[in-house]
Length: 260
Image: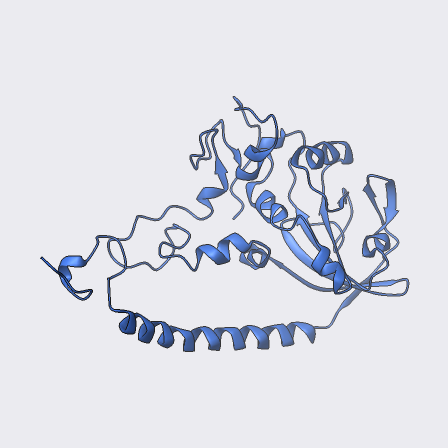
């Protein structure tokens, strides 16, 4: 029996309806109007962000990196702008026990060459002791600069799990912007791509049609076991860590948590 795209018999459970190309294009064009409005609103927000006031702070405060203690101003690497990610840290935890959300964020910006080309430097800050941080950075294979800001006050130290932007004017340094929570998603290109797919992120909070696969808690895919099963169980770790050479399953994790 021959069916047409609009025939209910062609409907697939838990999947978008099957339609003719012209019908699809009309629906796509209608959504595009909303997408363009969303883009323009994003541009307006960026313009407002550029007009925020800024806070001056002591850029000579010292952070600890692979070359020992250096002034925060060194993180600009001679450029005028700096973006940092402030990575959560659990003292004494094994590598697999570090924050899965921060691991995800840091993993998605392993190369800042295009930021550098626009006069912007990038660094990762964390409150961990440098010996532990250095071991973790080597294990993960990160190539961007990391620094310990242990016991330092805001805006260099303080709360972690943030993106922050800084501006330098000679020997003066200023905080211009910071964001946390879902504001950190702009680094994670995988989430943006998942938002384009039929099933999205697979998270329970999403607005999905009836019959769609049941969603799970936010960021459920950020930790997995050795077989790739998403889990926060005793043998799980942040997903990128399974790609490291020589990684093996573990029996205990130490302290960790969900910081989505």
